[in-house]
Amino acid sequence: ASAASAPSGGLIRSADRRGILMGLLTAGAAVVVGSVIGNRGQGTGAQDVEATGNTVNATITVQGMRFVPDTVDVTPGDRLVITLDNTADQVHDLVLATGQSTGRVAAGAKGTLDAGIVSGPVEGWCSIAGHRAQGMVFHVTAGGVGAGTHQHGGGQSRRTGSGKDAVPDYSAHLPADFKAFEAALPAAPSSPDGGPMTHRHTFTVTEQVMQVGGGVTQRRMTFNGQVPGPVLRGKVGDTFEITLVNDGTMSHSIDFHAGITPPDEAMRSINPGESLVYTFTAQHSGIWLYHCSTSPMSLHLAAGMHGAVIIDPPGLPAVDREYAIVASEVYLGPEGGEPNTDKIAAKTPDLMTFNGVAFQYHQQPLKARVGERVRFWVMAAGPSLPTSFHAVGLQFDQVFFEGAWTLGGPSQIGAAWSGGSQALGLHPAQGGFVECVASEPGHYVFVSHSFADMEKGAHGVLEVTA
Image 1: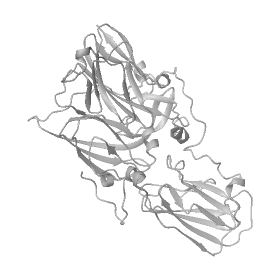
Image 2 (image 1 turned 45 degrees about the vertical axis):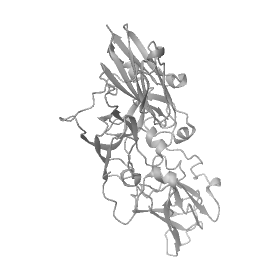
Image 3 (image 1 turned 90 degrees about the horizontal axis):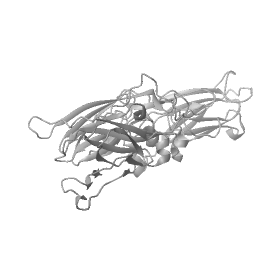
Image 4 (image 1 turned 90 degrees about the vertical axis):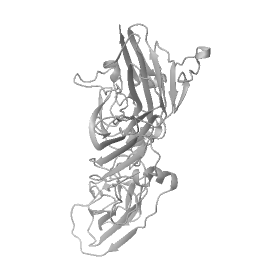
């Protein structure tokens, strides 16, 4: 696969997924204490203290999802200046509970904060979404006393964000001007000679507040401003050339399950303002997940950074209508805010969605006519929970699961015993398609047959007319 050149400065970046599986590079750290004259002024702590005239200059680095060292001890009255040397492969920052911050620091760069005169212990953390929950916390102790006894300690919660989490109203209507995600799927494009072709797309990463259903908005991480990201479609042998552009505020990346390629370069995290080119050739048919692979992956996926690539099985028959359904979870933080990382870790979602918004196809049904053959391509994006796709009042007579026909198909599997199917069960990152034909008009509800998930939003309507 082709990819953008490695960043300058000699820093070797590796994909977060690979790093989780293979281990993280270690980085050194140094804490240098100097003695200079300081002024008494606004500082860090619970009470006024006499300035000692000493300044503690602390340099910390990043190892995986940890600050190294993660503690600095000062004498009450010292001035503290912290330099964050970002030795990791993605953007980080350091924020103290008292408000001082390094600002966002790109991989390979440095940032400094002046904590002022320290009068007591203080907690700090990386404020990038999900990083605090992954362990990026920092402690300023004063004379050996930790922040557990200090009112400015910032508490022990390691979740992302602050404020009260939004509570969904499962009966709430989406806004009148809301437009449901386009589930209708066009046929795979073909080259003039019928041979393999190259698909070129640009995926621009942005972070924006969007509807998620239940009367709630959240700050979503998106490919091309949508959740899920664009559905790509091709045929076995086609090449896909994807330019990833990071217009977000933190590091991001992409991992296409449809391609077989070393993750080192193609799946590396890139800083805001950077781009890379990810190229792969589709060797196998199926519906394949793609997603951001920057740590913490569970948060980036839950925030919306996922999508599907459909590679048609050779000889796939045309049908009257095709729809793409990507199932995923939403873990609500504050209204308009970022996901709750504690809920993500516990796998306790507030909403379950088809194509990014709970209940959207209940309010804006998908369409078909009596006698039309409808194919549903379904992908379980997770990040952590399965789905069981079922259409109330219908049965499936064609089932394609994870690259193979399990019912129907060219060999007419199951025909000899009049076989049928009632649900397509998918674990995270699994996918397939099912087909059905409605013989009468009606409103056929499609759901995840895990009913708790259905009641949280994995629920839509296929409106069939004469």
